[in-house]
Length: 84
Image (cartoon, rainbow, N blue to C red):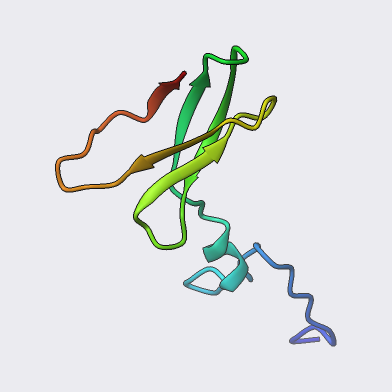
C-alpha cells in the first residue's frame, strides 16, 4: 500500500513531510504576555496583549482588580511587573 486510505488531521500537529505547520499549530505559537505579581492578593498571573495591540490588559485572578499596561515606542524590555 503506497498511501493510507484515510487521513487524520489533528489541529496543532504538523503532518509528516509538510514543510510548514498547519493552521492550528500557527495559532498555538502563543500570544504576547506579561507576568504580573498582584500585591492585592499576593498571587501571580499573566496578562495578554489586547486585540488592538495597544496594551496588555488583565485582572487579578482572585479579586478581579484590573490593570492596563500601554504599549509605546519608549517601552520596557521587562516581562515581569507588580500591580498594586
